[in-house]
Length: 88
Image (cartoon, rainbow, N blue to C red; front, top):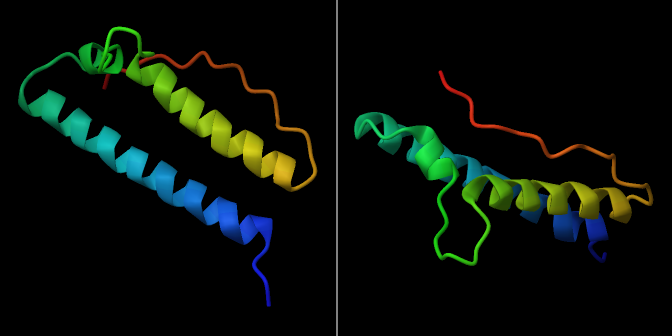
């Protein structure tokens, strides 16, 4: 029995987004422990010509959402990327 496109892609996206969540949780814990404003990390770039972290996360989630929708034969839902850093 051959694998479906769903089996070959969606579990990988779930793993990738789960890993990203874990990284962001560690970054938040580090910021809290070192008393660093979270917005400093969220707006950080690893290199000057890269997007900030917030946009990198948006791109990763948009890619997973869009690809999964297209593989199911439907149009990806339009979601405005207007997320901002929240302060707890």
